[in-house]
Length: 468
Image 1 (spheres, helix red, strand yellow):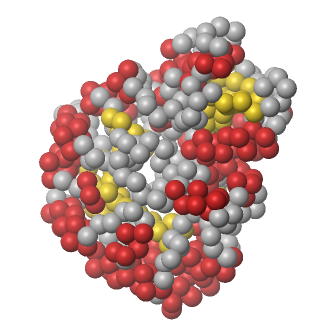
Image 2 (image 1 turned 30 degrees about the vertical axis):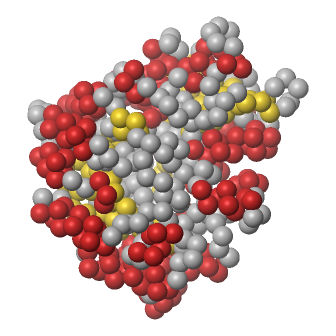
Image 3 (image 1 turned 30 degrees about the horizontal axis):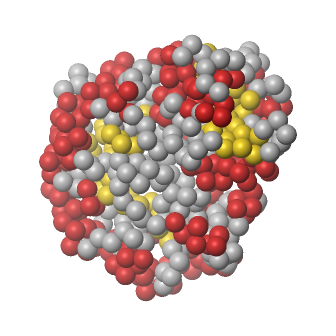
């Protein structure tokens, strides 16, 4: 079969192509899936934000609809697989509809965290645009579905995690989400076909993953696995070597859900990465509970220059409500450890969690001032399908699954419109107040996602500054 895998993104513009490129990275997960499909004999292409930028001319604008149209001039596909995140559900469905318009006979398959929870609602709503949904990990189920559509292999009703519209139009589903994936059976990602299809031989920044999932149970997170799955160290090292030595990557973003959950595993990987012929800057994503010298020292020696660490709020009381309690002493010890190793620190924080008070926000501001990080990324709390709190909201009828079908509401939570605007202003204030250096480029502020103009942004930011 001829298969196109798509990772949606917001339409973007930047003052220069260089500034836009700095925000775009190849999609590690879709390149992995493309190679698994290719190994099964299928012809596969990946359209993600970075490849779209390349094929549309490396300019100052990037819209995946343009790239999809350009690809259609020279290629046709039997299947289009689209990864859907809640924030990008509008873009994903627009790309699904466009794919059906361009290739009417192609089967459109959705995967990712958003349709994993809302599979029934989405199949009902988007009849004609969406044919299948794969719940959970698609490492084995996507190749099985491709084989089924090619007229061979496993029967449809036996494919794990598959949901689809039956011949009578009824929604069918086999099993729950696939959460057990044998990562040791997956081959190292080679990236060669991905770059060859673009006529490229180098990339400045790229993602690397050494593990999948997280063992924490924070109730604001839709992380499906609720446990950690680890890539074999040799595989992670080989993928890093390929990106750095074969494709000249200057920076690797180690985008595990929480780097360092298994200190010995991380230490082994970074110890071996220090032996690469050509070093690259490493940026990791972790949690204060997992900071440990045993892996941070090898990380630093391998080229580590900074970590993005979760600090959802400065209020210990609110952290308990989030089921993510960390003592202030643990936070301070983690900061001191990172500083002692010369690593730069970025922090993820959150505004608008249910029950948050102005006093809680003030504590967040005070703690950020004391820590003095290089970067702060402040998000506005939203109910993502799969969060524990969405289930309470659905039962209490405070939110409905159909709310996610309304694209005019980009961020869905329990706030009123004035409360949401205040939260957006507070998040923007915390980011601008405490960011001295941008470590992680690919983060989108809430005011931009919601389409607020510069005047509105400044008005909300000033109001927040006076309030907290």
